[in-house]
Each structure stands twice: as C-alpha cells, then as structure tokens.
Image (cartoon, rainbow, N blue to C red; front, side, top):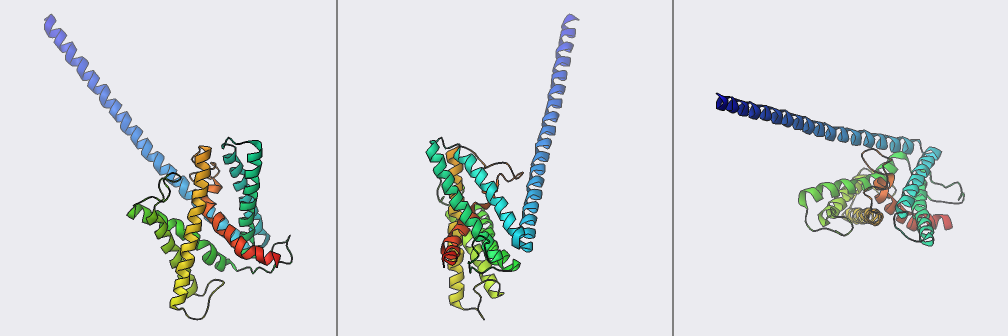
Length: 279
C-alpha cells in the first residue's frame, strides 16, 4: 500500500506541476496580449501625435503672418535645444561646443528665416527684403508637400525593394531604392503642382521640358532631404542616442521630424532668401 500511496503522490505532484505550468503559460499569454495591447497603444500614441503635429502646422500656416513666424521660431528654439543636447554627448571641448552652437544657430536660423519668408513675404528685421511670400495653398503644396513626399516615397520603396544601403555606417536602413522612391514621389508632387497651376513658377500649359524640370527639382529635394536626415543621424550616432529628445510622444524629438525640412530650407535661404535680403 505504501508503494501505491507513493505512486499516487507522484502522480498528484506531476498533475499539480502541469497545472501550474498551464497557469504560467496562461499568464505568459496574457503578458503577450499585454504586449500586443502595448503595441496598439504605442501606435495610437504615434497616430494622435502625428495628427496633432499636422494640425498645428496647418493652422499656423493658414493663419500666416506673426502666427506662422511665432510657430517657426518656437520650432527653431526646440530644435536648437535638442541640438545642444546632442552636442553635449560629443565629449568635445568647451570651444568645440561653442563652435557647434554657432553652426546650429546658422543652420537652423537660416532655415527658419526661409520658412517664415516663403509664407509672409517679409522679415520684420529686414524691412527692405523683396522676397515674395505665397499664399497658404502654395506654401503647403509647392514647398512642404514635396519634402513630405520624399519621406513617404523613400519609406515604401525602401521597404518594398530594399537593396544596397546608402550610408550604413550612419543609417543602417536608408537604401538607394528609398532615395529613388523619394525622388519619384517628390517629382510627382511637383508635376501635380505645375499641372494645377499652384506654386511660384507656373506657366500656361505644361511641356516635356517642364516635366524634366519638375523631375530635376524633385530629385534635388530628395537628395537634400536625405542629406539632412543623414546629418542628424550622424549627430545622434556620435552622441550615442536614438532620438534627439522625447518631446513628441511616439516620434522622438522635433529635430527628428524636421531634419529634411531644415536641409531643404537652408539651401532655399542661401539661393533665394539671402540674395533678396542683400539686394
């Protein structure tokens, strides 16, 4: 009987162990469900943040004037704050940090001035400026939409096609296919802008030469936007961080979101706004 009792106790112990294991699996499943819910929650946060960002930019751009100027100045200040946070991680000298701060003020400040000028047509501290300002729709579709199209086109073409990387030492996910897709997307937006007579360089009708210019412009915008992205990625890699900050829930920092815009509008400042200010 003792042997039977021992055997029954062994069976009971195994059954209890299996029951605990099953409960543990159930707990793990619940944990997985929690992780899934966490992913959905993260996605919701990203979506809400994106909608809020788009809404804020659209409203400020539509209002124009000092509303747009103030909004751009706010963004520029936040980017410079994040810029300095990144530079502080470079482990450079005090002189080096001052030099980087100076570079940041020039780079971000010039891009911000171009952003203000394309909408308002003037910069109050340069009253003699003759740089032309444009209406809400023109700025939205001719100046902003092509840069957004670069990100969208690069994302989908990079995902679908893949292939060789552009600069794996700086960004391990950017591909040549992504750059080409971004250029195509930006070119299509610019062609649409010209076809529907929106923008500063429209002309009656549309020719093959006009399409060629649109493709050239789209390619240039894609290259500049990607260069801005790489530059910020290099700064983050040197600082040893993933995001420029966590100011925007689910999206990182402001610098993370406007790196391509900064590069494009910095060049716009150099080739268009600065000559208008000087002349």
